[in-house]
Image (tube, rainbow, N blue to C red; front, side):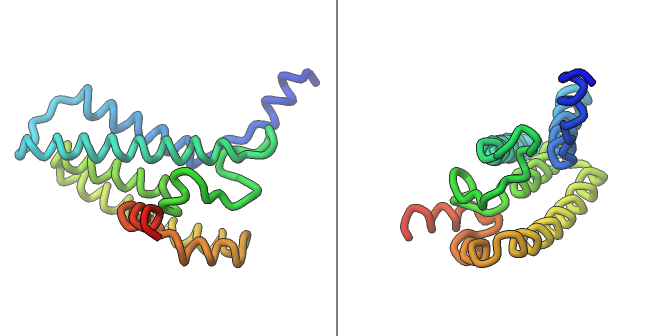
Length: 167
């Protein structure tokens, strides 16, 4: 078997990465290609700010995790040590918060009932994902993660920033 084929077979596709990229692309296409006239035009600007903040937050967290991957076979989500630096020193789940901000931004941009229902449903699923991931990471990192939970909020960026700056 050639080296290229071996390398291709060793690559694992990360569903979170794929779903994140698909969500961003879907929203970008919807926002730029489809013509819509939201009922309250000024809310769409708030939406763009939230959407962009979500994109930046998600990207920062992905880059931080990618920095800590250990082997070529490891994807960026599977680190071998607890990552508490960068954006992870402010909040524990920046990717989830990024997706929540995407969804909130998308609600304000489109002001569409279908998008509101889908986005709120997505936020509920993301919240459940946060809880499940906390349990998983408690098992993996035990007391280190327990301390991390005690000192770092899950998704409250402003509380995390205040903790980092003043405590």
